[in-house]
Length: 119
Image 1: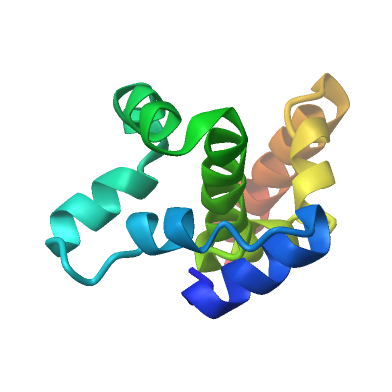
Image 2: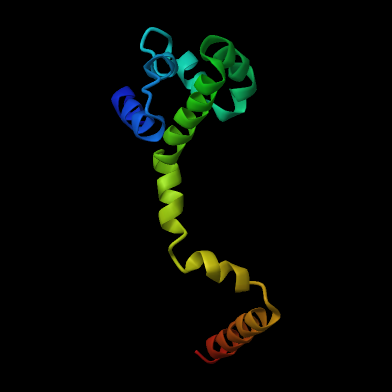
């Protein structure tokens, strides 16, 4: 997750406003780690959207959602998935269960059995 300063920089570039209060509310050090994590949990957005909208207005809500998006885009898990998708393996699995591929596999298996019987 980017630090508050980074969120503010991104926000200034995007909107011309810093929305510092929203970023400080979302990443506050005055609340428990559990509460801070809950404010960033996409499965709990329905709980926090009305709170943010009431506290910061419609524009504040949009920035809160952008804050969550920025955090998730920079999350190490998502970065790893993006890197893994570059490998050909991800395209290879689509062809895994075609009948020709399986027939070649079974032919190889039978050949291996026959060879092992001679040794």
